[in-house]
Each structure stands twice: as structure tokens, then as C-alpha cells.
Length: 362
Image (cartoon, rainbow, N blue to C red; front, top):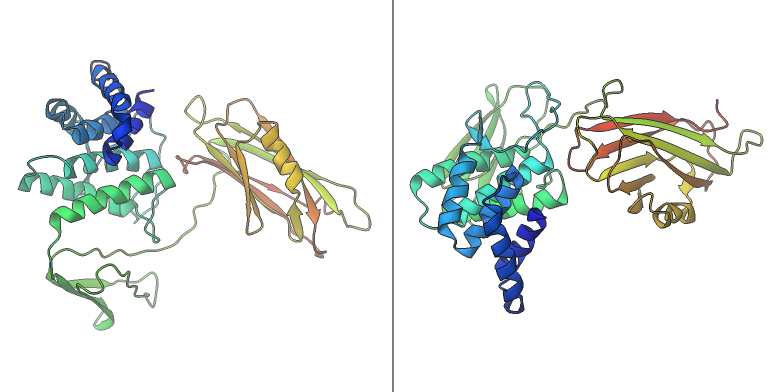
């Protein structure tokens, strides 16, 4: 309830909606009363931003002091984590990837500091450590783990960038490997909003980056890799089966059944996605997918690039069974098996996997 109230208050304060003054007054009174009760860290981060926008300096100062005590210092960066966070899956030599919720909490705190009054040099130094952590969580396309945290994180980074912006800044970025130069990027006032890329000729490899000039710029390296989905200790227990009438090795209609349950550290999940990769030559039957929505087994469904995405508001510990049909569009010989991938939308490290095969190839 506090989280939703804070979001409403923030929306009204940011939009300066003149007809919402009575609603805003009630929301802010609710948030003020909530400061007298123990709150989760994400609620505190939202309340901090609301009090910052409202100009409630006393409550803002108290909340910010409390949140700073809970900051996690890691490799010269600062961030915040929610309570009882699932254990992350780390990859050697890479910065750890955190959940959408952690990115959102950290972003609201950076945003609150950047929008606050009387910003000092020490504040800018503190914010720089937060900004570096956020940038390390950013994907190659400029986004983060979900739509929600991406919106807040970009807003926070832009607000911080406005504080450190220097007009007419320019940089020369030189990438070297050994004694040779791989490439050079020139950043100036005219192309400062343009993303420039330089492919690396060999990975793995040892590269050096030299930057000269004035002002601030962002240099990001990206390496794509695959993390196999764990089967024994996965957070989701997933199974899948297919059935259909086979005639000469062909089934024009196949029924796919997915059974999924949660076995992680929490009582239930956030919104979860069931990603069904379809068998070659088959298309999902739209009516049967809509039936899952009508029966309230899923909240929505999507089809894209031979995948079906089923959205569940939550996955309980009790198994949930989802069935839909696929129709043969093009006949494909020797159809290979496919797979089901299930993951928590805000906790992607919590996932599960199951293969399934064509009913005529067993």
C-alpha cells in the first residue's frame, strides 16, 4: 500500500497536476504517518524521493541518513539491496548482475540526491559511486533488467549528468592491443549524444583504453556470453509434454502442456514469464492462448519470433498447468525438440528450464 501511495504522490508532484491537490495531500499525509512504522528499503527509497519533490527537508534528511547506513560498498561503488534477496549467480571476471528491484531502489536514491537542495562536492562524489554502479548494470542497448527499472535508472543518471555537465567538453578515446592501435573514437559537442562503437578483433584479449580531453564521458565494454539454466537447483520446477494424432509421422495439431511451480526461497514469485519456443513449422493457436487469459490462468500472452510468452502474475508452490494448441503451418522433416524457459520478471536469476519433443518423434 505504501509503495503504491508513494508512486501516486511522485506522479502528482512531477506532473504538477493542479486538479490532484486533495489527492496529493492525502497521499503525503499517509507517507508522513508511514515514517513512524518500520518500512522495507524499497518503500524508504520511494518515500525519500516523494519527500524530496515535496520539499519536506526534515523527513528527507532523516530517511537519507538511514538509507546511507544501509548502502553496500563494492569495488568503489555504492548500491542498495532489498531484504531477503535471492543469491545471485556470479560469473568470473565480470561485474555481478543484480535484480531489477535493486536497480530501482538505487536509482530512486540517486534521483533523490540529484534533485535535493544544497548539493555539495561531497554529495557529487557520493553520487558518482552510485552512478558507476548503475552504469555497470546497464545492458549494451542502454536499458536494464526491466521496463520499470530502466525508466527510473535513466532518469536518475540524466539528473546526475545535469549536475556534472560541462559545455564544450571533448574527448579522444584510443583503444590499443599490445603495441598496436585498434581504433579511435572522437567525442565532441556535436556527437555527444551519439553512441559510437568499436569492435574488438579478438576475444579474449588484453586491451588498453586511453582517454584524453575535458569533461566526463562513458566508455563501456560488452561481452556476450551464455549462462546455462541450472536444472537441479533451479528456482522453478518445470515440465512439458506434447500430444497429437500422428499419421505417417505428421501431427497437424499438437497440444502442449506446461506444468510449473516455484521452489525458491520466497513464498511465491513476482510476475513470471513462461517462454515457450515452438517446434519448427508450427504456429500457436490464437484461440487456445486467449482461453488461458479468459480462464485467468495467465494475465496476458504474446507471440514473437517463433516464441510464445505467457505472463503469470505470480507462480505459487502448488503446480500450475497451462495447455494450448499449435497448428502446423509448414511441414518440416525430422523436427527436433524444443524447450520451455521460465523466469521471474524482476529476479531473472530465478528461473527454470525443461525440454519437450514432437509427439511423433519418441
